[in-house]
Length: 340
Image 1 (cartoon, rainbow, N blue to C red):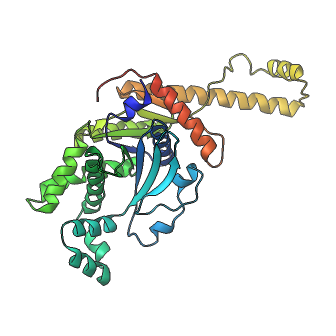
Image 2: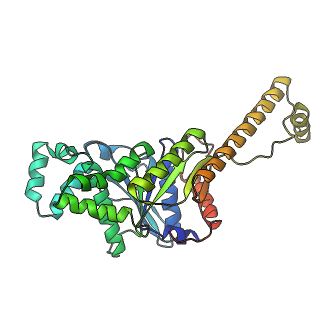
């Protein structure tokens, strides 16, 4: 499958996974690959709490693209590709989304009063599920603009959703408000968001996991909950942090390691030889453990898998982004084309 074929199946890709699995990095990799395919990509990140102070935080996503820019409500350009592709990012905050919603519906005076009184955050978060609906409502608005090919609208929206523990509640919030609200603009917004989430031509959910027992277990559980409670379509699962496979069988004895060292002109002391053998055995065990978890994931979820390699770096930047993007493109190339 060509990467463009996969990345064009839906206008919105909701990326989620257990905390620490590299969810934000994967969002950047997907966006970078899509931009290389000539697409205009908008990465939407979900902020926590009121917008005050959130706009000044350094951005991990921006650093991945070699920038130190803070990401706020207005689109921040992260990358441009000669073929016309580009990556932008925005931070979605419930209180700012509420102000924009009120402006769009002719209630500017009310929004100004909420801001001046300091009650904006209280109103935006007063109803359970309302902060999530405000954020998802903004995603839906951008998706509609993209579908209509309005000037400046992106071709693909990548939503850096909350971690898996919160993702189900986040995506399920419109359903809850449908049960709680009989009519009015809140119900209409909830109905429109549910329609977007349940249409695979408009939205798909991409799960990110590590090849480890706990993340794989949580990924499996979250995937079933998203299908059952949200009704969203699941795209490929991305297995992040896969160690490069080394053929270590038969090469971990002191004699074998010593022979390799001698051929390389390296002199090893007894302790160094022992440490190398121990390190090799540890690496072999980790490889096997990862392989077992990847197999368990495949047995439990009938979804395509895409693997990204482990990066042996303390921080990630453009070189690592390039390596991961190439790996993702190669993985997609190995998939067979299927309708969502």
